Length: 133
Image 1 (cartoon, rainbow, N blue to C red):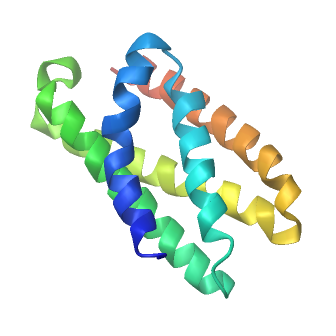
Image 2: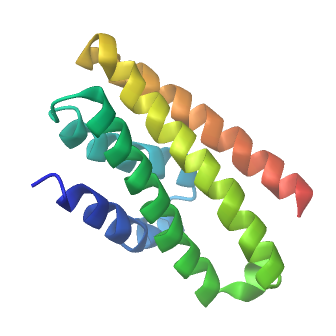
């Protein structure tokens, strides 16, 4: 059952992309979706297993999201820009998913705080990347 979490992470960017076209708040939508994924991770026994699944899911989410940007390469520039974007986005998605997960270690109710922190990090990441381009 837990092996499905990275699979859902691979599909998620394609599902939420149309939603983000209607509601242009990717930092909110993506972090809520990642929070939903983590709901299923916190039932895994052992924190090491949880962290591994979260990091794998973040990498797969980033890879899948990058496929969407490849389809629209003119929006991000050339392939070197795409590679830099992939690396930075992977770090950001890994960090935000870990923050959401770690917030649940004390109590599951703290997940909302983790999601809020992840939304802020994602928002400021998008602002910073927007300034660079």
